[in-house]
Amino acid sequence: MLNFILLQIQGVTGATGAMDTVKKVVTSSPSPTLPDVPKEQALSLFELLMKGGWVMIPIALLLLIALYVFFERLITILRSGRSDKNFMNNIRDFLTSGNIDAAKAFCRSHDSPQARVVEKGISRIGKPIKEIEEAMEDVGRLEVYRLEKNLSTLSIVGKIAPMLGFIGTIIGVINIFYKISLVNQVHIDVISGGLYQKLVTSASGLTIGILAFIGYHILSSMVDKIVNRVETTSVEFIDLLNQPSK
Image (cartoon, rainbow, N blue to C red; front, side, top):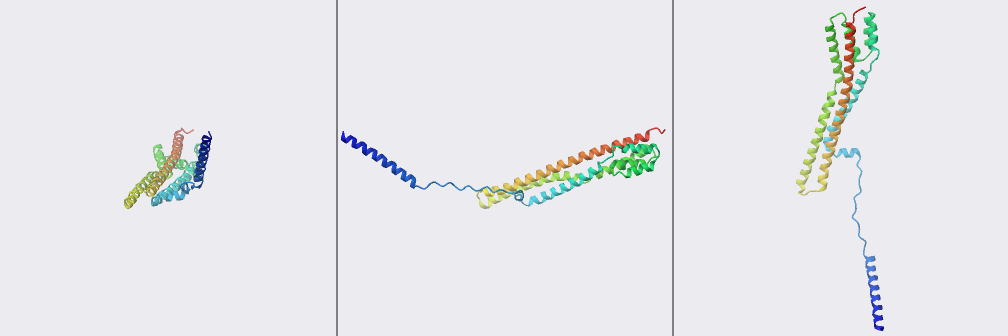
């Protein structure tokens, strides 16, 4: 009985010693270190665009051209679109009273396409209606040309900018394979550099192309409204001339 008790005491003592040894090993062993995670570096918009390489220079020039043409045409069209709601009523009063000179002066005081078209028609009063209509149509075509001047530039920018972006994409792919051929190994740095150029130029070209396309159609719709107004005024003027004199 006494021997059995002694054996149990020795077993407990041995287990306690083993636990103490494990604790010492655990506390003495160095803690594992986690790998360093690279800190994220924020890029400014300018730095990001510079990743596109030299192709970004002509793309930036196209952006400047598109902005200049859009705002220059916008100001011109807005000025030409101003009209007096009582314009034809005043012209009718002048012509009915036989005051042709006053009607011409009234047209000259209004800087608008419809005023210049009507003035041309007034200057042809006394000639056949067909000749008056042709003269007014000629002036109308000139006015439309002035309004649509340089609008085709926006259309050209809208087509060229995406093409330049695609050229930048091709150059980026060429750079990737060229650098891989030099080192005979595929590195993420080599691939990411080419992808930067590829994606930045494509995104920039498409963005400028879309903006130019939208600007072109906005201005074209504004011109169409003015042209419709001029045509309506011309019809009213011809109808006024065709009215029987009292």
